[in-house]
Amino acid sequence: MEKQKNAVGRRKEAVARVYMSKGTGNITVNDKDYKAYFPIMYLQNQVELPLKTTETVSSFDIVVTVAGGGPKGQAEAVKMAIARALCEVNADYRPALKKEGLMTRDPRSVERKKFGKAKARRSFQFSKR
Image 1 (cartoon, rainbow, N blue to C red):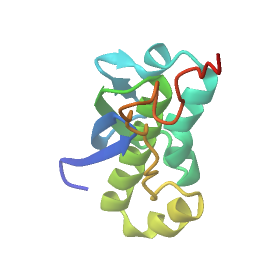
Image 2 (cartoon, helix red, strand yellow):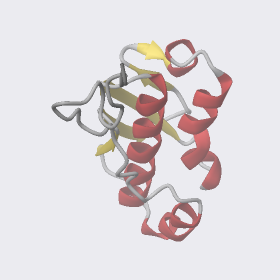
Image 3 (tube, rainbow, N blue to C red):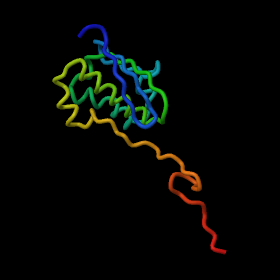
């Protein structure tokens, strides 16, 4: 693997840019350790999932910049970006990642608010009298 591989992952409003290079397994998110940035264990597992699937947990140093959305959306954006970067490194990882559902972009996002409604679908309270 020459220098570094870059990839982008998106989920809801979150966008994660990943810079992957050979290393010892350090994952940095917005200049913090990923365990400090994502204190909830579930989110940490989401970030690690592509590396565990391909059994490359201690093979790469990963630097992530993530913006937008909430913690869960950001963690899932990072997960997808890492999976895409791993596919660039070695195309043989793709079937395993695809089987885990890590290569599929989740298109669900917040529905827009409509006029004449309180929210996207919620109506204002109706008063009969």
